[in-house]
Length: 378
Image 1 (cartoon, helix red, strand yellow):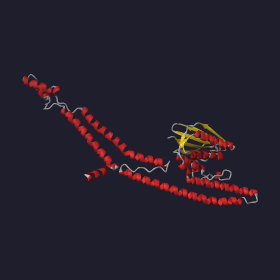
Image 2 (cartoon, rainbow, N blue to C red):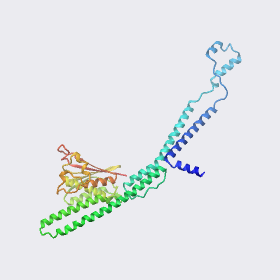
Image 3 (tube, rainbow, N blue to C red):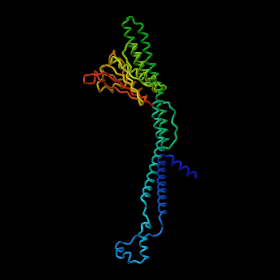
Image 4 (cartoon, rainbow, N blue to C red):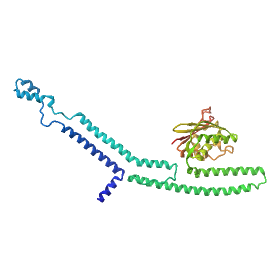
């Protein structure tokens, strides 16, 4: 009995075994039900032989007058519709087919729900892993195939956490090693006698320090561990606009938006980068909020030269800059849009660029640029 129980457990512990068992049970039950229905129909018919009516030629030749009273009575009784043995009823055949079909459809539905449930749970865990790499490991239960997939998934999550930890330690070491010589240069700069030369050195060191900070922040990805809260995106947009207006920039906010579940510091950094990009290359920024039950749409528009169509996707790659932006007036290291895109994707959204609707030069330039951030609502 122990061996039988163990074999049964191994059989029902796999997706193949469960599906095979369910289909065999469905076929058995459907045939038993159909056979029971047929037997009941046959038992309801009157027993005994029921000869059919005589051939037409014989009936015409003899006629009722040529037969005796007993034969005529028997012939009339045999030919009477009320004494015919009925054939198999059509409703019985329809019920047979309906029962079989219904049982198979019901079993297919139950089997799909039964077998897909652990796979759906695994898919949901994989989706949640993109938002929280430190989430607890999944419980390794269910069919054999699902347990093996879950074990592999947990091992992959552990390896990713270990790699992220190694990366953070490396970035911290690089940050320290790079800032140490910058500090020495800053101290030596203060000893320069020429004020103009000292100011140029200060500007170069500050630019290098900013480039290092932006690059290390991008590599570190520190915002990934930030908590999710209900964020007033409309108030955030007005705060960003007011801060830049105090600095003399032209930034306006249009539209309204309801609170959204987000990482506040990360989303602020995303909008800061988009608005800063619009001011740097497009002179001004207009933030348009369009809210709906499905998603929040944020558009940042400028009045700059725009981009060639081939550059609209390239500029969001890390460290990529178009040739016209490689000068001291614009600055930057080509990470602003890449960071914004990364934050958008971590929120389950998407960031796209397109040229505006103004007049251009035929190549996509001169119409302004529109950055569209779409954040879905859960």
